[in-house]
Length: 390
Image (cartoon, rainbow, N blue to C red):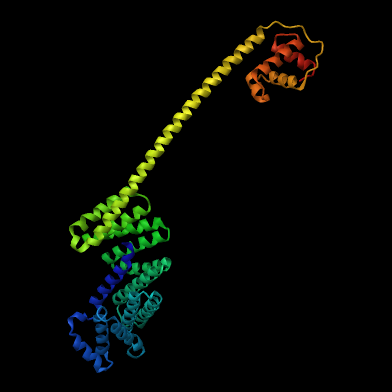
């Protein structure tokens, strides 16, 4: 839905302008207007008739409306009315937009912008009329850039239009423009600014008191929350929008169908998320259970090893001292064990450090007791230090 919003703001701004500043062509007989044009007097009545005919034929005969609009632009140096020239250039831009020729549409929109600058410089028009033209033209240029995919330039011109809307507090125009800006900021990846604009869109929609505008604001926020993965908030916004669309289904059938589709998307996303969370929770429980089992087994093994080590230590201490070897030479492994005994290490530590079994450590310690002719570890360490062995 957001992709059709730029055209809405353009038409809305244009209709506001045409009813406020130009003679409404619907109040005239087409034949009478044509007669004025055929007279070719090139006076103010002629150029106003040309404009009104161009407006009248825009839908029924766009090519004829195009030719009339070219008259307003081409005759500008002669008639000197920049408002009419801007309107003509704008009509030509609309024609090319409808044909899908966006680059030509942009050229004519920018020409319209130049004519409005001539209005500002001429000093013949009051500020409100200039603001009307300026904001409408900026909105049109922003729309063309948006359709061309140049979102940065589109934002630039939308912000120019927004300055005028804020200045005159045109609530409805602000509502739609903030919605447009929210969409564009999403497209550029600036979700923080997108969220700010969409909240402003909702704020202005509520201030307008127009239920259609409020529904529009809810829809815009709903789509934003889907994009940011906040499905619960998105669901709330779409349900609020559907209150309006469901009671105006004759006029809003397309938007209601879109709202229901988005609600279904949200439900599917929520179900997928819940399934994922459930699966992750099950995996986490299984992993935790496995870790606890391994931890308990590890603690049990440590306890068994510790108790075994204590038994061996007690056994060594209770062994009778054998006759000493006459040879006091110690090998490297025995020296290593002596050093660790001096550092207060137990047999389990020595086994891990030297990558030996506990039984082998006990055998080495027994050898040391024999060589030093004592059952006392302290005596072994003292004698080894005295002899300079460690």
